Image (cartoon, rainbow, N blue to C red; front, side, top):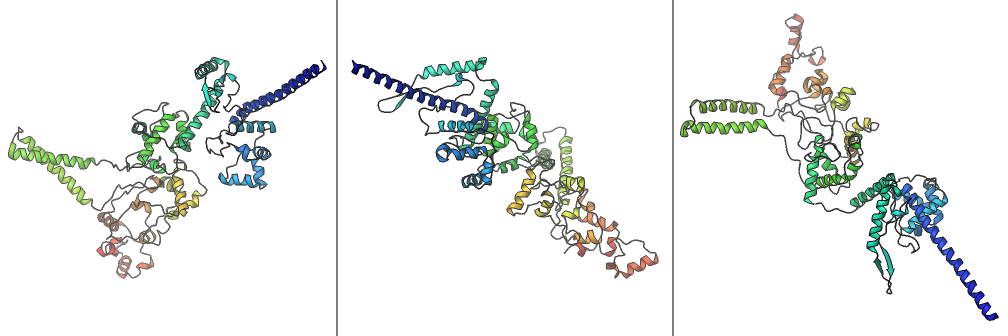
Length: 551
């Protein structure tokens, strides 16, 4: 009997001990689940914008398995104030700071318990997490959104098998309907989760190459050229970024410049630029008219495709040349009818067409012959959109500041990029173009490559012209030859610069004859003294002599 009582006593004690142990296990498991639940919310609010768990590097390192790599005390201090640890010279903190290009992580006013909850959540999402931790991200504030892909059963051979998929699918639908009916997560929270999902999708899209189909490229081309409207009413790309070269000044970069900047494989991401524009103009444009993810994808597909081709080789159509060819055909047809076929009645019609055609063709040929070597109206694209109106007009910068050799050299000189940087070391952004054009200038200085400006005013090789002689001695103002550049955004050749134009100037322009250089012209000085002449013109001192301008 005593033996039986002792046996019962031991059994009861054994049961109580196991109940106590199991209660501790369940309590710890509950605390871990709670930590993961709270940790997800804290992670989502404080960490997920810059870090991922197993999805690769964002702005900061991937934190998968970080618990095994760093001591808990180190993580606690680093999350609270990474700046302090870097300032104190902690080797690991400094190494991270250097690795991620000195991007500073902000300090967080989180308690030790909150940081431990975040670390518990990271551990739950890492491969080394135990079976006691739920590895699916718990949905905050509502257990109805705890969507699972299926329960697993352990087989004798150690493998797992998914079961109850149909049941879980039904639960998923019920959970979503509960959320939509108001019993679940708020719509604001759902919007936040959707935004996070879009960020992850965008990151994954950039992380791995995406197969682009010809249909995607065609859709992007239609969006770019305005053949298809954007869903939220954004203006077509071509309305600002011209495709065909133009002789008008467009502050916006041309399509070819955009293609060059975001050339396939260059490292520049057109998708990031369209989803998070950097320029103020693009920010204002897309503020009320955002692009959808599909529209961004189609545009980037088109730009990446055409960046591998010489697409923008088109030039403005020469309508006068086409008309000349058409009239030439009419002349030939009218001549054939007059001499051979004699179909058109009355005969005056082909005769009139023939005569008018000859007159027009003669005009075209004469104009082309007399304009050989002349470039009046020439206004080429420049590598940087430099506006003389902004610099010489609005800011009243003297021409000689940039063209500093004009008073003592044959040429006026083109300023180096260092001259531009004298001002633009302080002026970082343009009023019209933002930083886009100035980035080209900074790149030229950094790479030590001269900017390849296109010369506008060109003279034939057999013509000699000296700027110093005209500006320093002749006291000519720049405007007399180049036009009013202070009113020009885009420089244009205003005058013909023909020989006749130069001779007319020499025949009418007076010479400052008090200059000691002209002391040797005794005959002209005697004529002035006797009153025979009161002024000396350029032609009087050899301005009409061929050898003065021609070699």
